Image (cartoon, rainbow, N blue to C red; front, top):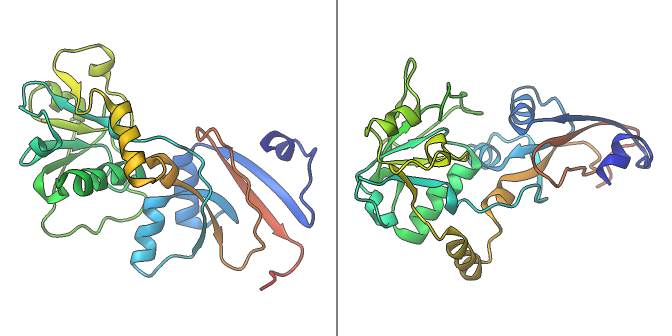
Length: 246
């Protein structure tokens, strides 16, 4: 369906459709900053933060564009004495973002499944192997959250390799892990079993599915277009031909 909409073989009735294919991060920033599209994918964490602040101009459509649990994305330093999620309390934890949906899912899972709250850890935010991108929307954290930002040429992997971090929450697989370094391991080595159990207990969809939904600006006639693969996002510019019906 996606390709036939892009190449024009299928034309939605009453809609002039202009499609752009972008990386998710590009899409989110352009929609949040400039409301550039009538329909687009958007970060669920950013959407809910705006709703909580009473300043959300978007309408959410619950379409799952990416389905991935995040239990495999928590890494620990093998010499840090971390064998269970509860061992993370009091530890130094690196994160590439704070408000990314996948990372919000991980923190929520640690809190609600294992009793490990964000305030129980000392957080360090920076790029995994390069500079860190700024948050999509401004952070507004509780006063009991300890969050330090890396500076200069610091990266999370360098601090981890130097023994200055005890754990990493990362949407991407760290280079140290790919190189099979003995200094790094997954918090959940049997993460597939843990994820199956999580789904059986909660019936909640994967963390990525909760993170990738479509948004529409208020006041527009809505048609939903998405790319199921989740690696790119389809953004439809809908030039309205008829008024929105109640």
